[in-house]
Amino acid sequence: MVKGRMHFMRNVLTHAGKPGRRVISSFIATTFAQETPHAASTQWCNPDPLAPITETDA
Image 1 (spheres, one colour):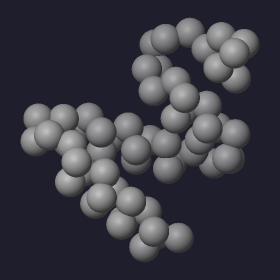
Image 2 (cartoon, rainbow, N blue to C red; image 1 turned 120 degrees about the horizontal axis):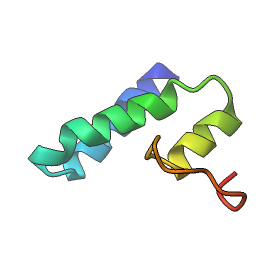
Image 3 (cartoon, rainbow, N blue to C red; image 1 turned 135 degrees about the vertical axis):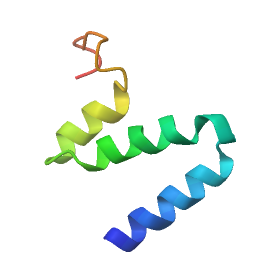
C-alpha cells in the first residue's frame, strides 16, 4: 500500500505548482494518516481544519 501512496503523491505533486507543493503534500499526508476510511473521507472533503463540518459534509 505504501508503494501506491508514493506513486500517487509523486503524480499529484508533478501537477502542482512549485509554490503549492508543500501545502498539497501536507494535506495528502494528513489524509493518509487517518485511521479509518470514514475519517480519511471526512478529511479529504473538508481540508480546512478550522472550517465547520456541516451535515452535508459528513
